[in-house]
Length: 155
Image (cartoon, rainbow, N blue to C red; front, side, top):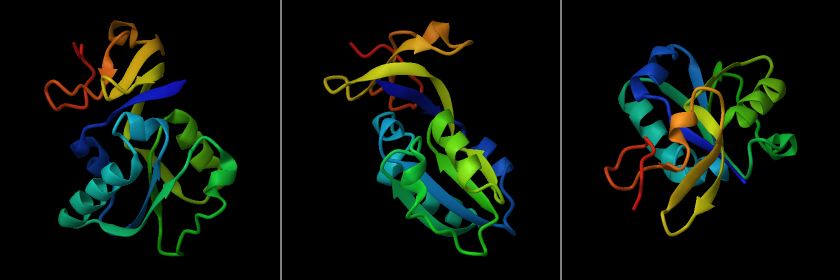
């Protein structure tokens, strides 16, 4: 089982950030990594993009599974972190809200539902969508045909 997510457009993310605040990026290395909305590569790219745009990225950290509270045990945020950018599904986002209740938490991802990882398609296939995403059933995230993070038929 995989939580299927797609990236929120970068401009929407930066619209929710403040250049005067310190930002921590925490990235899930499980389901979000399979969808290319988390993991080390996505986190490194996000950090580089934010820094290039003048944001103060204080720390970046990959954790095994953001939906498991104990995986946050080794995440120590410096005092100058005001906002945590979570690169995870909604479950990881909720876990972060619980662990970092004194910080502002925002998400870089939109969770579409539950699916499975298909290595032959190099992405996650949505099978059980959340409300509003029924039209995405059977689509692969990310869509490798056009390079976008939007799911599509990979045939």
